[in-house]
Length: 339
Image (cartoon, rainbow, N blue to C red; front, side, top):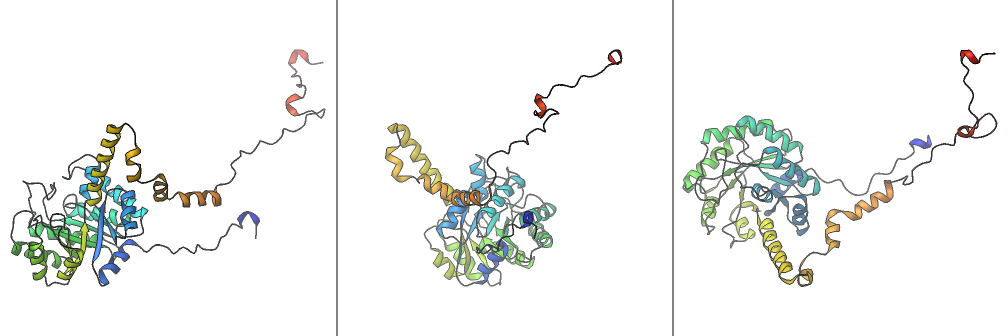
């Protein structure tokens, strides 16, 4: 074999990560409750993965807040997709993307599904509100789309997907908008008939009872996703026993970070030094570990070569044996100098 092409290496022993959509399907097919945590950047996603969560919720609220903007369809699909895709690249657990209302009508939804699927996202969640939406926990405008309109969005989403494992989750906002349980069930059943792979029942009561009532009356095969942001006293195990398949802790990383960073900065300004907080913040070693510096350094040792620039070749000798740049110049004859 030509030595210039003899760089073949045996395949790495490290197993290739499973595709996100297939991972998520396997989680839904397996016994037990799936628990995922919200994040708004790859660092937060890695922290959730290391803590042991089954997946990542690419949170519209968290991403909007990280940009200092309301969660009200202000950020574009491209901006939200960029964050979701970067998180999917940073972790080996599936990413479920909060895609608001689908960024428009059924044609927008089809474009969204193709882009998110291509970015390695395992599932998208779209809610049955009118565009532009407002975060579900903000009092006031919570306008629902008509059932036929939203069913069209779901059908379009399923038509657009290419990977059969990719999931479309229909988020029911009836309880958020002030409708009763019957309306929430009617909508969920219609969305399941339109092809939704799962339904998410959203609620803002401090009691889990409305969600438990929904779970008790839900008899279709599509699994149910819940988000216990306000009814936080109930455990994931209890929700699972009641019939929930996935529990989303949608914004707790963001809220914890706001609290911790605020207290840290206040202490630094008050004390004029960082001594009091050093035992309460992550050491730089942890930061480097989360960045993947060990792998970076190993790859640098294996693949980064030729650190010293190569010198140019020596010039050819002149007629008298001197280097060409020191050789006497050859006179140029003109017409008047000719013998």
